[in-house]
Amino acid sequence: MLENYLYEHGGTWQRIPQWCNGFVALGQTIARRNSDDTRLVVGLAVPTRAYGAAFAAAGYVLARAELPVEQLDCTDHFLRLCNLPPQTPVIYRENDRLLKGTIEGYEQHYGSAYIVVRVNREHAKRKVPAFLATNIQISGKRFAKLPKHQTGRVVLDDIPLLRACKVNLAIRDFCLYPRLDATIIGNKKALLDELNTPLAARTVDDEFCRGTLQDILRLKERVTDGLGYRTSLRSEQGGNVKPDANETPRLVIFDGAAGFLKWRTMWRESDWIVMLDKTETRFEEAVVTLNQEYVSDRLDSSALQFPDMPIAVDMLAYEEKRR
Image 1: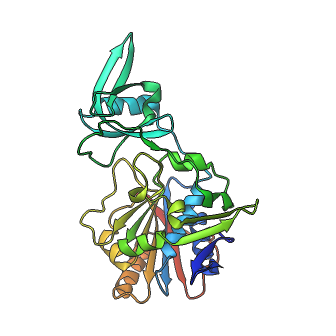
Image 2: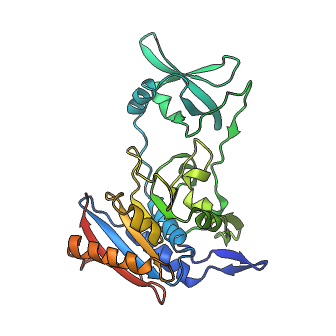
Image 3: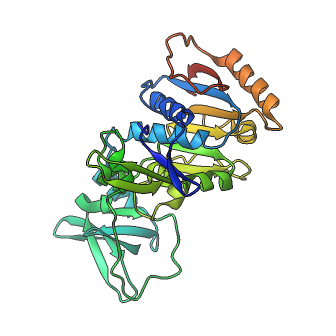
């Protein structure tokens, strides 16, 4: 999947190490598993945590990218927007541009209902019919005030780095439509540094494309408001990493013992990858805890098949009923 990708090291481009592709293959395998009744738990004891979670998430996201995003039902989304309080911040997509706006309410004209969105301080409004309601996305940010005038931000619907990926995906949909495939819980600074790692690859047309891991993971916290994302990041030390009731990821990756030990009672509807660094202070405690879960909750997992993992990586995998 990423076999031909390169990373920058010492001013030169070098092929991604084979062990990285092992984690990519693991994420890909988990993504293609299909079970509504059971969830998968994979525990990994690794020599170092560096890049393991990031590449496993990359494999998972790219494999899931072959599946179309379920589009929001326009009617349901329209009704949800109608129930929002006035001044709720939104992003409105108009002619491939993103405009900041606020909900002003809804109106009816000649038997048709419209959401009214204000897009600047000069009283400019857009009346959006129900069948275009998905062009309005609730913003995760509250605007201090709307611009006096705005032309909007151009929607970028291409990611050059993905053209070289051996995955059948619609890059425009990948850019525009959100879906939370995976959440990573770990050391936020370390993970953000890894997502900024420069990558490159050549397409079948010999085009040299550059980017970063963020181009693949589409981290929600780093994507332009109103555009598509695929992953989210929670700090292992955070005071609140509870799942969003409206958006449960299919996969949760605990990147380190601290996050697993602190937050393992949550996220029980999702598949898990538990990545434990053998040099961590709480490694043994986390291993004992994971083994206890394995003994008490596992189902018959004899049919599970996984790719070969890198040398010195120990793996435990089992299924249990979704809770």
